[in-house]
Length: 78
Image 1 (cartoon, rainbow, N blue to C red):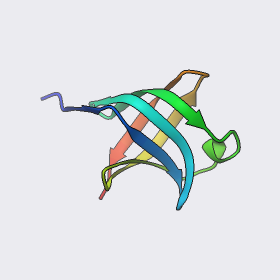
Image 2: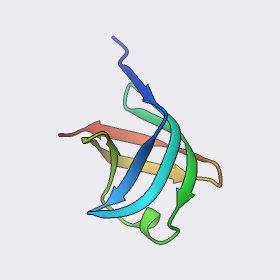
Image 3: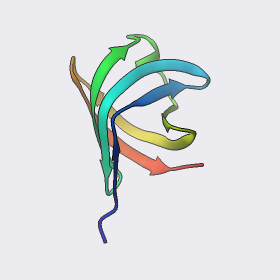
Image 4: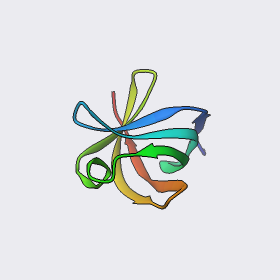
């Protein structure tokens, strides 16, 4: 069964540091796609990264960042 969650705002974090702000985002079967609104060029390259939405967290397994989009894979967290 396909699992899909989506929203209009999220953050990528490296530890407790902000790495990127995301606009519209979606996770479908652990595949992440999102629109980038702001990004820290150094922190976005660090690992481990976590996707944070209203206190919910997903560990980022793989990430590709372009000027406007983020795509990658996440794993459910806490």
